[in-house]
Length: 500
Image 1 (cartoon, rainbow, N blue to C red):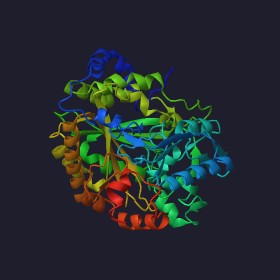
Image 2 (cartoon, rainbow, N blue to C red; image 1 turned 30 degrees about the vertical axis):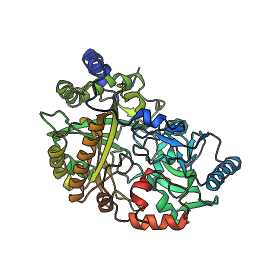
Image 3 (cartoon, rainbow, N blue to C red; image 1 turned 180 degrees about the horizontal axis):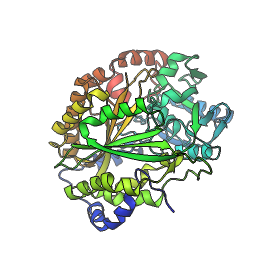
Image 4 (cartoon, rainbow, N blue to C red; image 1 turned 60 degrees about the horizontal axis):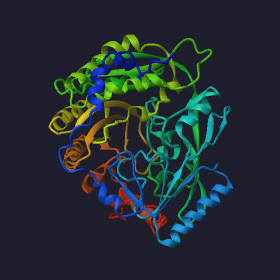
């Protein structure tokens, strides 16, 4: 029997309207312009091509290798040798895991690309910590800790990604009331551009620690990490519907007044007729019964069954409205069963991917103070509906202040707004997305917020500087650490290189 989760409650209703959803999801839409990117031009180079989750960054690399060994001496020696070979050849060096970023942040044109795909973890239950290889995926971490009765303290909202990738972008999730991933990071081992390996923590090489956390792989190669874990627990959800503009303050007030909440997220109505008028806040608290917890397997079939509803929203106001009804009316009835913390976070993003070859999923994320959230809602109402983009979902999370990362996106407590757009893969759609993104970034910056860096590189240099005022200091420190700029990617080339 499957579990009802925040994603999976759609399953029963999804089956009921599956015909309508599948109709919109399975028929490729005609593109309204020349394709983007130009596949023929990309493939003509004859080089190995790598891409990221956007599918819009086919990048030729000189060498690509996958490393799967445990983070022991043989692995370190092999990684150092590859680094030396790249340096001797004058090639940039970039590491990746799932490459879920969307603007080339894990790719270096003409360079050496290393994919880490490991499965190594050691846990200390008494100390509440675990050490994990950089390339270990979160689903493997969850499985290992689940057998011990523990759960990762902070991780991304999906389980497909590598732990070091989460560190490199200093991601957050929906466990509350924590700050970003870095607040759960005790230490890491880092291979520097010269091949030396150092330990980084708040009390040892603190500047390197701050630069590596959310540093997009520009300081070196993470080998392994030491992280906090928390007890797994059986949790039950509660649902609140409210005006969208009230959700930010209500989210913060709930967390400050109720220490029992362990997981929480919000949603907004994305139908054009009622765009961002109504909000939903879902919170999870431990149940009285914490005995005999089931294993942390994710919802499986139920998660996949919700896909037709999500994808059926493209071009359909009817399905968007229906989905909101399912979330706000049926979910409190069908999705109220208790579920473990590990099962809630053990969901792959792959189950919800688009199968239309003419479209791709693009994420945005913005961070605003809870008391500015209503103004953020107004800004979105002004900017998004006037674009050609299809907003399929917005998920709201709470992120506490980040006091660790040099490139921090949360100077204080923030509401994180994660938006999922379905974009046509055409030149016109790409230009429209860039225009809309810059419009949103301007409005968010004017509210004292900022935007997240792992996604499309559409922000202007001026917007980047406003959102990340410590970027120039970061670039200068990077030049001192890595004068040959061996560790490089598209984020460096686009924004940071001109500053250092």
